[in-house]
Image (cartoon, rainbow, N blue to C red; front, side, top):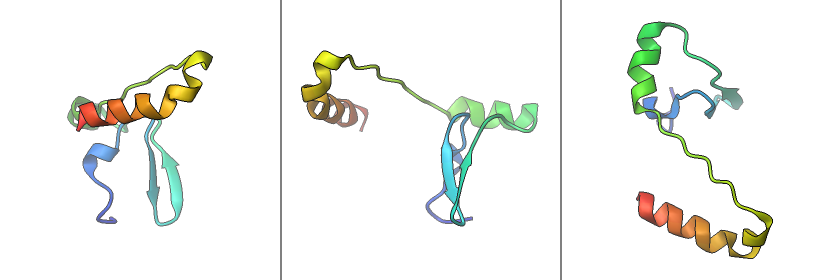
Length: 68
């Protein structure tokens, strides 16, 4: 396993690159894995309207600064 890949990278919808292969996590294999990895997965979706196009950099900068 590459050192850059962590267990927290494996959540439903994530794209993980391993050995030059881009893998998309679509579901967990069993309930145990879903229970263990599903708790630590966090994802967010931000929907910006067209009027925010020119402010997108500032908005993303503020979001990443607040999340650490």
